[in-house]
Every structure is written in structure tokens, then in C-alpha cells.
Image (tube, rainbow, N blue to C red; front, side, top):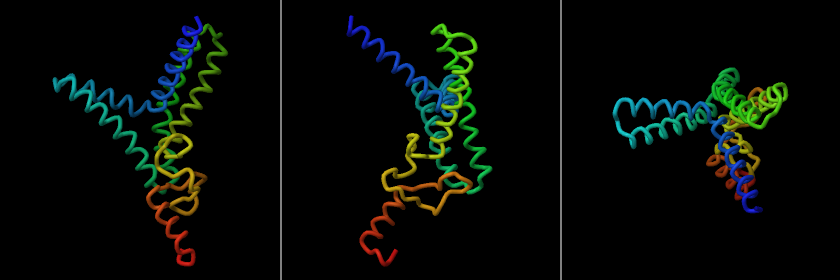
Length: 179
């Protein structure tokens, strides 16, 4: 009985984590799935469809972070972040609304929870495309506290590179007077 309750709670947690992750990566997931279906429809085979879909989804996710890090214009960075955040927010809204309907939550409470989930998931998607380490991005070194470029632009943190910051940090510790 106890094992059944534990496995049920673990399973529900795993499903919620999967829904959250898929909602955060809604744009890359949708484009990858579309590419996979297109490849399958053109009779390229199941393996090519799967590999092509994974390549497109991964490429879109990584390309978004790279382009966001290279852009210097705040409006363009905001627009690119919103391109990733809006589909994620919509996916989070509908996933949360569906879960609240399954749980028997009232209509008003379900809409409020779904709106909060949309804001949270959309913000997480924006943070991940921006490469913020706290959001699970890989574009920086969270422990060093050092940035590759001085200061952020328009309140956004500056793009960070783990390679450049480690090199400068190591040089500074070996030769403090040289900078």
C-alpha cells in the first residue's frame, strides 16, 4: 500500500516535470515534431524522421541562445525572447488548465492557476533562451560571478562565455598587475 502511494506520487511528479519541460521548450518541440512529420510524410523513413526532428529541435533551442547572446539591441533581444516565451506560455496555460480540469478545480480557480502557470513557464522559457544559468541555461559559469562583457544592456545581463571568463580569471590570479 505504501509502495503504491509512493509510486503514484513519483509518477505524477514525473508527468508534471515532463509537461513543464515540454511547455518551456514549446517552440523547439513543435518545430522538431513538424519536421519529423514532414520527413515521415515524404517517405524518408522512421529513423530519418526521428533524427531529423531531434536535430531541428536541438538546433532551434541552441540557435536561440546563440543569437540572443550575439544581439546587442535590447528590442531585438526582447523580441527573440518573446518568440520563445509566448508559445511556452500558451502551452503552459493549456497544460495547467487541463490538469486543473482533471482535478476538479473550479472554473475561476483553474483560470487563475493557468494564467499563473503561463506567466511562470513563459518567464522560464525567456530565461533559458537568454542563457541565464539559474534557469538551466549553459551559456555561463554561475559560480564565478564574472561576466564576459561589462554590464548588462537595458537591465538584461550581459552574454556570458565560460571559456572567456575562465581565461581572464586565471590570468588575473596568476598576474594581478597585468589585468
